[in-house]
Image (tube, rainbow, N blue to C red; front, side, top):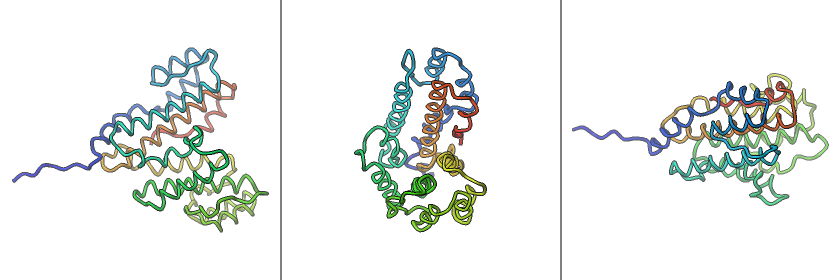
Amino acid sequence: MKTRKTYDQHYMANIQVVLQQKKIWKQAQFDHLMSLSSWTDSQQYLKNHGYLLNGAPVLVADIDALYRQGQADLRQIITELALPTSLFDVLFVQEDLVQGAFKIGTADEEILKKYLAFIEEARYPLMVEYAKMSLDCYFLTQAFRHKKQPVKYLDYAKGYLSGETIKKVKELDNSAACKLLKKGHYYQLFDQQVESSQLLQLFDQAIIAKLRPYHHQVIGIEGIFAYIVEKQMELFNLRLILKGKLYHLPLNDIEERMRLTYV
């Protein structure tokens, strides 16, 4: 007797996401946007690719509005996929801060609590890894940048780096700190000298690398998770390029700060 083939509960959602992944911007599209000399042409190009940039002239607020709308659209996509939005809240923690979801003065602690909650819940290993790396990036950024100030909230240091390791990093200069970190979980990231200004980009690219095996996966939620991260990197790049154009930054400076998007 034949039995009906059963599918993962997220199969249909994954199929829809695979189709959406084909629309992720490639480097050639970013390059084309950077090459456009007028705001009118840039706005039309963005419109042709699903993004609305208002303003004549374009202001910083207009670029930020495009970014916020992109984040809102991502959350709407999750809803339309009939998936619990709480599964992906960890990806929107920083965006919630930008949009004022946290009270001023408590934002950092609320962010750390959110990441720690995902680690302790331990429902999906990929999300736990993302939350741990996000925690570590937060603490390392503080340790590298603010040598004369104590690192706050070390009780939340539950990533791959302990509070004691963070304290040691803070006490060392950047060269010695990188040598220390090279001996631990992030040995591949710190195989050379890293400056504090590079940390966020370094961790973002490490996250993208972790997601590569899940690209086009049609079981579980890992492929959906990877897609959302890709779209967020796309939005980051768009905001970076547009603000770079607004402030007349050299193209090389913009390109150096861009994130890879195609997992």
